[in-house]
Image (cartoon, rainbow, N blue to C red; front, side, top):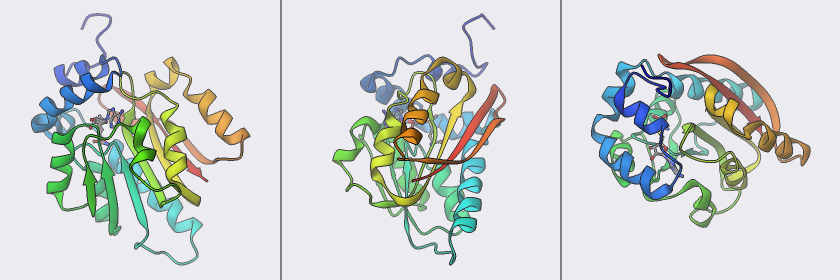
Length: 217
Ligand SMILES: C[S@@+](CC[C@H](N)C(=O)[O-])C[C@H]1O[C@@H](n2cnc3c(N)ncnc32)[C@H](O)[C@@H]1O
């Protein structure tokens, strides 16, 4: 591998070298949609499973009566890997959105979601959903190099109800190279979020580790 290579998988490496321009990111994922599941499976991607399990674990411990009928939003749902995990855990009202229509179409086809919207940029998501409308929000594999800026976290917080759970993954190199921690610190200082758990340097895929963040609003 040359120095600037992050992944030996060609498509994953190209994804991590995107520049965050929504038009380019969208075109890239529209093209990759057909092979995304194969490539991520072959590279040992476990982000969706770990994030969904963490969400479930905290959901169970935070709620007196476990209730699967509240709405959960999968932000940057891709082909629906997170929705599949949540559905297996028993969640029934899962909505998803993604920048790429082709990825969103794949997520729709899983049957795990109540509604999936394509063509939505996370930075503008508050224009497409009512504020405070979700009891849970997850975003896995999106806070990663070349995709969304850390400030997109503010948008997800807007969509979350008070008391709701937010679970986000960050690739380790994204965390190291961005101001993600600064954005988190500001949200915590403003009492918008409380950090319940941070799992650092946990398995993500064969290319490297990730961090998993669990917040309560
Ligand atoms: C690595 S995939 C992760 C998909 C899924 N969450 C998973 O874990 O398999 C990144 C996804 O983020 C989406 N994405 C990238 N930038 C986005 C943005 N600005 N707004 C919404 N989705 C975005 C891409 O289209 C892609 O589906």
